[in-house]
Image (tube, rainbow, N blue to C red; front, side, top):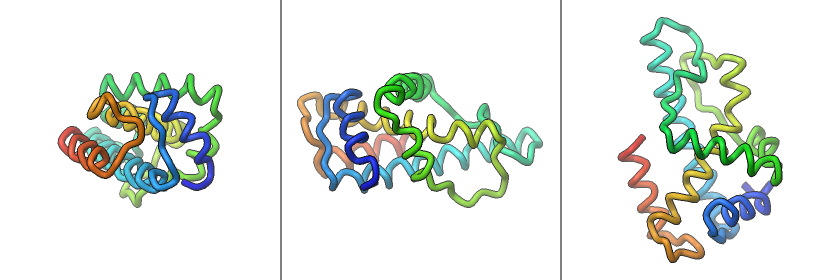
Length: 148
């Protein structure tokens, strides 16, 4: 997460009026990695149920909120240029099924959407928050474990 930290700081400021520091970089990376893994595993289940041997983008359980965060990320990405950084940092978990070419192409957008939703949920947990602390990170982790 060291690479591109300034872009992530800008994204969090613009998306949720939050200031993050280098200590938050590792938390963001771990959080996004876990949630990307969960989404891909759920997509793998859907692809299996539908008799496919690859995960298609439509197999990923994208909620309306995540879909909006992905759209918002695309707008931010035009100004901040995070996609190349996310492509390098998005570590895919070992999966039993492969990813379709479209799914591979959409990974940075999916990671960007999860990142934006993270920033906004941190803000929702504490509207007066300026810089997330351990308490807020733990609350957000609990929320995502319940929802995903």
